[in-house]
Image (cartoon, rainbow, N blue to C red; front, side):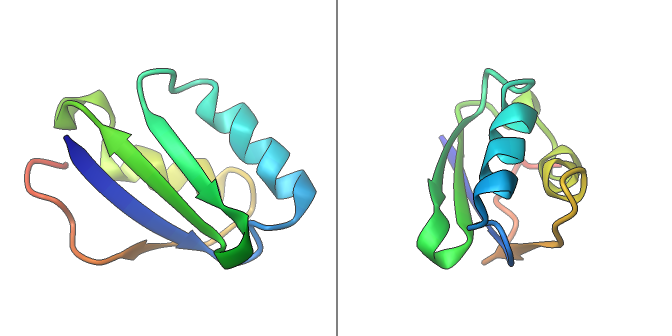
Amino acid sequence: MIEIEVYARGLRAESRLLELRGQMDMQPHVRYKVDAHHDLVYFELDEPAQISLKDIMEVFTNIGLEPRLVGQVPEGVQ
């Protein structure tokens, strides 16, 4: 399993959370958990080929947020 953590300032706004849910509905094979108090989203992937890092970051840019990867890019993630 691969874990990715993304910080996106402004995510805690309820409208942004709803938009994030809408974006993630298009990625049913990716599990995620939101920490709205800290503007963080934790992603879990069983296989690195399920989604690219670029695709994950686009989820945030599509809703008007600027994502930042927390930590290093996990091995095997594009």
